[in-house]
Image (cartoon, rainbow, N blue to C red; front, side, top):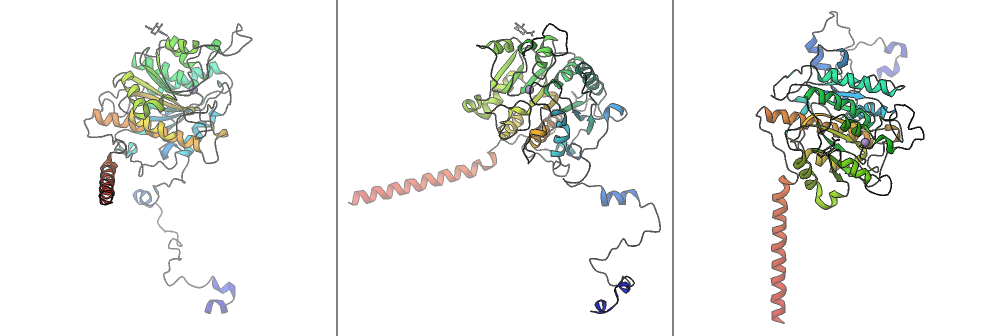
Length: 428
Ligand SMILES: *[C@@H]1O[C@H](CO)[C@@H](O)[C@H](O)[C@H]1NC(C)=O
Ligand SMILES: [Mn+2]
């Protein structure tokens, strides 16, 4: 009441006396500069999903390519390259979109209930290594840049060298980019590991196509046109980078060229097992997992390559070559969780093209979740090798007792009802 009766200018002269929630305790600038660092960190060293500069899962960003003195164990690396696509371009913006969509992944809420661990607080030093600066003007140079960048990073000594014992090279999860970025990764990995790499390839398409299977009236003119997002595994096979007989495609539903199965025969010659999208209806998620594990085992080094178009375009529309009839995001996640025993030496998530995504980031969110599952598997494998106790929680396990009890109760009730009905009938 008093304030209302005073001239407005006098209001500012009123002393800040009584403590109230709305008082500003920081009104006085502290006379001493240099608040202790730990005090500042205690106050401000935190992030919400919606705060901070966009890195993958709020990981520390280090431009690993120019920071060789900062060792890491697992790096998230952007490969923003999309000038080798056959249909819609735009995956050069994939790394940005996936990073933004990973915003609700944090170290304080990162525990993967299925795997029984939090990859962000476990043994590895994980960095967001930033992007490879790839030219959009010259694909031959781009391929050279990507190969050289990948080789540079996996050649380094990881922070946790040989602890776990097999951990002798850093592991990269590459965010594409179109699918052609898998070729430079395979070139570098085959060289570093000194052997062909088994490829586990989730995709609607084969990507083992001969370059001649694309239409061109200029096939005899020397060009860079052989290197595409549908031929990179053919090139890799020709170069002996892919373990012939141990590799797998999963989620296929592409149309084939010509009048017959020639594309499949060409694919077989490169030593892939084909799992088609429809197969899941016949054998279920568990059957798909069993087929992959039986083919690949747990020893051979595996490169896991996930083209986001393996998911149905109704759930993941933001991609370069969409094909109706794909797996659900849930099915893909369940399969990825089921194959955690593989010996992953590298992985990618490619063909996320945000310009065609829905309004709710559906495709990019799926991409970020896929990266999280890949990361979880890499971390878990290390924990197992270190002799730590980790278990895979089989879906349905914790509710199976409840379901069993409910079924028993229902059967009992039915038996009682039947008995009563029979008793009534006997009396009539
Ligand atoms: C893969 O192995 C098969 C069977 O041994 C062979 O016929 C084929 O040429 C091999 N493919 C490549 C690309 O080396
Ligand atoms: Mn692909």
